[in-house]
Image 1 (cartoon, rainbow, N blue to C red):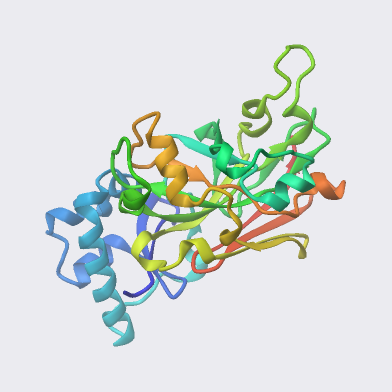
Image 2: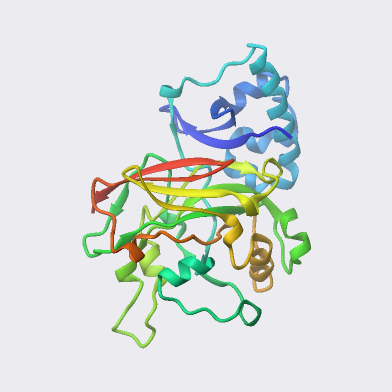
Amino acid sequence: MIWYALASYDNGHGPRPALVLDDQLYDAAAAARACGMEQQPQLAAFLNSTQLAIADWPHSAGAIAALARQVQELAAAGALHALPAQSYRLCTPYRPGRIFGAASNYVEHAKEMGTKLAPRTESAPYVFMKADTSVLATEEDVVKPAHTAKLDWEVELGVVIGRECRNVGVEEAYEVIAGYTVFNDISARDLNRRSDYPFTHDWFRGKSFDTFGPMGPWLVPRDCIAAPQNLRMRLTVNDETMQDDTTEGMIFNIAEQIAYLSSMLTLKPGDLIATGTPTGVGMARGRFLQPGDVMMASIEQIGSIRNRVVAG
């Protein structure tokens, strides 16, 4: 299995789908023509947009993989050329229909936040929802609201659902995954709590502002990553390392999170699960994001997203 990814880019004429090989973008429509695959019905959704490809993932995935293999061969032979790096900007790979966030899903992160967890055998994943309008692409700006003083970062593995499913068992959970992306769960820590209601936590407010969900740079199909529970995650602020850990540290793993969510509701293609963040967030350091700061969130075998903070 070769490594490839699905991307969305804009060269001044609106978002277009692309394949990524060796960190280089190939326009999907041009690639399909070069490979003589532009008339394949299974590719129709992807040639329109990555959004439609994910919505139609069970029918699109095989044809996209076949196209990626042919693109690799043509590119190696010099018969197909990547888009010039300065000719486009990356968009979000797609827009999630729903974003589910796993809270306190790494033991060391829970400790640094002062969260006392019940034994794993006596608990279940704790999930909150984050607004889909929070999403933005790499190289786009995170806007710091004027009324927060504690803006924080959280690098997370984003798991994208590829087919509608309900009551999925742990053993079958990977079968419903389309792929993976990098997600940065930006959080206004001082807005996560409230004193005007008896309900002290309000994670929806603290995490759902516009621009609080950088994601990308693209989506890597499930089959391209053999061990998603052993991926190194890093986040830097102004080139200083803040987070550096692996997905192996999850309390509830990817499959368990999918099983838990699907036991309550129907998961749909395009749903994104932000699977939790490791230790190293700003809250524990007493350091928070300020206008001008630049974050780089990276996950091996996927890529990196870079976002600057600006004043709101």
